Length: 605
Image 1 (cartoon, rainbow, N blue to C red):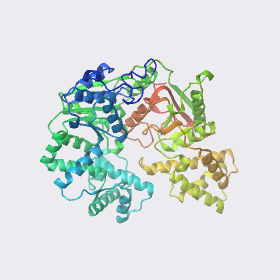
Image 2: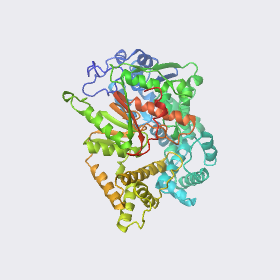
Image 3: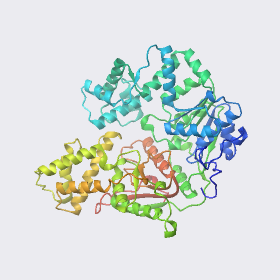
Image 4: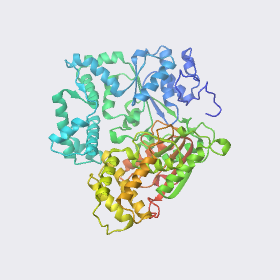
């Protein structure tokens, strides 16, 4: 960061201690507090009673809570072995352990909910139940598939993943198979298939697991909860071991995880939670910000500390992020934090309107080239690894993969396969290639774009594609979007080359795929807004910001629309300095300019 040496990281710095260029282990408890801002220091020094840290994006929340644990250990208030810090990913837990070691607080347990529960389950199972601990399923999809077969319900691969996700949601919300149909109706959840069928598959899946002595990841939490509820002696043993708790990303806690936390705590209140309701973007998995929002109601004597000094983003980016939340509605919006940037001024965020999607992708690639060019050549001098293109749906990646490849800009995909390497695209390409070799037998009464697109659609129908999208937002919808992108590509080719047939279309696909088969290199990141959570870059491009994509079409209730707004907020707050928000009026060149910019941009431009 400007004006700060590597040896003295700023209060919001996220670099791990113990690496070259970072400070040595502090020599005293007071030295642990050096470099913290007043609010971070308040978190670190409030060691007793319930503590709720409301931490905005980029405000150094991990720094605050790791320094709190380290200060408590170094001051003799906490014994390292009695502290359990819980977060949501193994990466975050590993980073927390590394920081704690660097602060002289090795020995503190930093784990995910699942790994902490699994250790307890394995330890107490012989005493609580007897015999061997049931086998943990690596993946539940195979057993769900068998359960569907026994229920005489046919599922393709994507439908299978969607039903599996529904079972996971049911279990983390503590919903039984019989209660599932009523529960999704009450939650306003858009079921990917008939709830009664999912309920049957869920019940059969649970029976198969029981018959085979197996458990899944959700069972790890459920069984640990069951043992702690039914065996007060075991619950007391756990409470003697762990006396102080810290929970990161508390807005993402599910009802089942909250129940486990309550059992760990018992009647004690040595709990520190940290979160930001404005970054709740995983409610479809069962996460809810209610536990964070209701913390003061459950703990009236709690100390609440707000972290609002943003060390990540420029004042211009922060102003846009604040403006976006100013329009928000609902409970999460009532607790929104007004961030205050601590960084030097940067460029104003750019809003770019384009005629069509290819033009948007090409313009994005050109702007990235400018940012990557050396400063002495008039560029921005931004490394490719410090640039990201973020989109709502993985199906949007193909245009940007192609545009960056055409511009010679290296890129990497996070959280998704490259477009032409996705299973459904490979399957579609095989079907199209076979149809082209055989001759379609279709005289194509419709010429040009409509005819070629209809022909491609007919071939894709043999792989299970339909002109209308499936309900919900799961794997089946992702697969549909990918195949729909092929139909749109056929429309584009038919419009540009009216005589194009299936063989020409297959050749076009091969050419596009080959152009993107360069070796994977360190480059510009392409990823979805969901996957970008927890990451940051110098320059961020938020693309495809049209109504229907953000908020996405299947966000129907006010709560679902507000979660889409929070998703955009997460995207905006990933940027340190350069931020571009763009959209296109039409899908393809020459198409009808019927799209509207995302409603979330109103009043911000």
